[in-house]
Length: 564
Ligand code: ATP
Ligand code: MG
Image 1 (spheres, protein in one colour):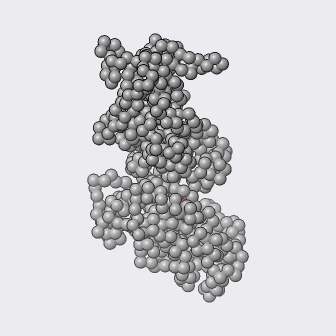
Image 2: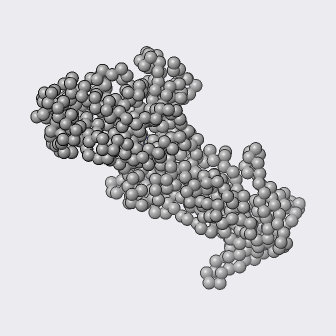
């Protein structure tokens, strides 16, 4: 028996379920499903639906099925099925042995259609799809009845059987529900239930040449699986009467309740499979798992965690009205989670050579550095220090402004976990005038502590030892689009791609503890941001890191500036 749990935050869907439990509408059962069509990879919008459906099932102690809604062969594939299974698992959900395919119901669905014909509730219509569309009417005008609407049941049965047998060309006939061409809801004006389509289905091959439409297949798949609450996005609101009509005519045992909620829209990205397919197809990104993509596969590769995504979905909640959620909220959830769990390390993205003149040439010291300053339980590691180091180019300034607490002429700075160093001179490239090397001295008395003479050194910068550090490639990602709502733009959405969304740095240096870091492992590079080992391109011979996010939201600051 399902139980309500008042300690969990509620929403309008859970309120409906609570009401059903109170009135015993489904004999105390709650069963949900997540029904993706395997015609693309899952994106963060799907994650909202996954969290909602699996979350409700867990909360009420019922099952949540994973159903591949594969009733339209065009564009569906096994690759997509595999990615969906992998992504839902990775997000942290389990369906046990309840993995279903709508294509397994093709025979049952066919028999349901025959049953409708026998009840005089469906007919074979021989108008073309254009004619059907033209005769459907508008919001203000009723539709026209098809001249084939009153075919006899026997004729309909015969034609439908021959449609299945492959006697007719694609498009020659369709099966339509016989409802009401004057209905104020256009969806109810004798909708098409089956069409002839010769295409190879990735599971059933050429076994079928007729395929059920979504409206017919979906409600019956829900009913076959004894789903109680069929949760979908708002665009199906007008289809709910049809969902109910089909189940009512067929007098099935299980009649689920369809409930619609607002889909997730996220700023600076697009959540439409069709458009994501376009980006992949045109090569605007490297694939479905490009770390800039809003797909689960892309976010995983970028270093996002399932916990952060779940937390994001919990925070946005579910409602009935559509809006655009700020991507900063998702990024905030990711930072919050990584801040807790990411191992701190030092890595230099734009290396500048620093020579410590008074440090013995062949000496090497090891500093014990905590993996997480606030969490001693995460342990520590040894980081080697020697005479020649790399620091960040940005941490040196030839003529430092007053409040620049880093290295420059006349300045002292603390090397994180190591000594305070003092500027001596710099070496410039003769041709470019660029600073290529800085000479300093170190103060041996400041090993891991303040200077004994009490002088103040405010800046702390990160570093690596030149000889001990490991080379790495680092990929810096930015938002995929330049505008907040690319889908709303009147022109081609691809015109608004942010062409600077990927910057690849090939001469980075990271501390030696990262040699052999496992693919996918996540780190905070001190002072720089969160990074993860690219699971696809990184190897023990050539490390590749993806920047998951910077430490703070630089976009927020930029847009604040723009407002001024
Ligand atoms: P798209 O519009 O991206 O093509 P879809 O609805 O066609 O998505 P499906 O595979 O049918 O993709 O979606 C599976 C489930 O995920 C459906 O129940 C759908 O309502 C839900 N879903 C899809 N996109 C979103 C979104 N942006 N926010 C919330 N739920 C979504
Ligand atoms: Mg869909």
